[in-house]
Image 1 (cartoon, helix red, strand yellow):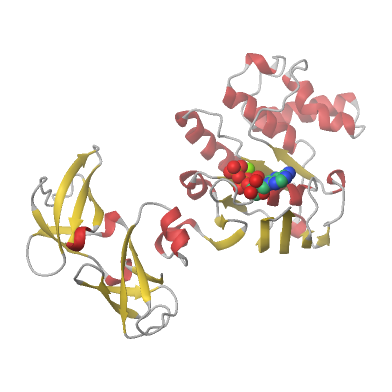
Image 2 (image 1 turned 90 degrees about the vertical axis):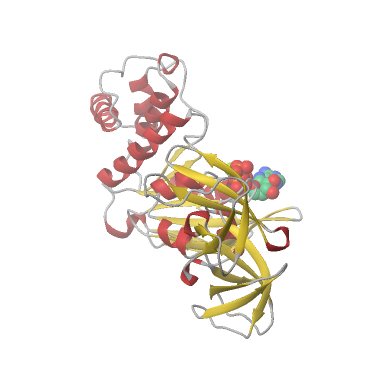
Length: 360
Ligand SMILES: Nc1ncnc2c1ncn2[C@@H]1O[C@H](COP(=O)(O)OP(=O)(O)OP(=O)(O)O)[C@@H](O)[C@H]1O
Ligand SMILES: [Mg+2]
């Protein structure tokens, strides 16, 4: 097991350019020893490039990388003591499962008996005991990925790097493996940096999530903080579903203060400033569909239901508000709440703390 701070990873003002593209743009980030950190962002946001720089397969143009307090920015991959698992199964097809897992030990000159014993233990760790004699082609996709994980942790690396390791699996298996990897990580106490573009996967698995957009770090935080207190418009729109209202601020505000926004197309809304907002500035207010309360028509902001989509656990309402503004509301099933029909006029209500105002 890795000891103490050995598994600590620090990125300091990391920059990586490919021609005119800043694939990674001054990213500063720390991963605690034993922490599970997800790198989340759309395609091309720099996730893999960051992982490759940590692994030593890419060298940054600027900045430093420290692992366990040691500057490894220019160290070759084999001097960093990291495990890696990629999206595609990278097992050797001609070797048995046990031989695959033992391979890194063989490369390090570990004797046959010890190799075999440690490979069997690693196989048990990923719950594949008894399958050691098979070849990769005789395993399912999820089992193959578990073998790849066993191989990556066999020499007890201080950090495990994973790049979309589950994206080739179907939905059910993927969800099962998400929890399994998380539990494995907790059991062996290893630091994990996990790349994904799937927000549900990131929220499910990670202690903290780092959200990237075009090479820039947008926000790092616990899943709950990212969802409930996004700090940028990008994070509010990228994580979960969000309604955006546009308008102009009445007065000015500091972060956390209540604000009143005069909406384009008519109406006024109370919200909470997510950042400092200048007097009279253009504003975007983010409000989750499940935080909108839908009440029978009356005073206040109204809307007309254009569609009601029943999905078992909830009903999603498509709404059209003042000025043709399109919104979504989600009504949980079984709570005895009013479920309006298409064509019906409704009134919308919300807690001001659930509506977050950003500079547009
Ligand atoms: N070897 C390379 N040469 C030139 N450009 C590159 C290279 N590798 C990455 N890029 C560019 O750098 C940017 C970041 O790429 P990266 O692979 O890190 O994205 P990603 O977040 O992992 O995306 P995805 O979710 O699609 O895997 C992209 O614009 C990409 O085109
Ligand atoms: Mg990638």
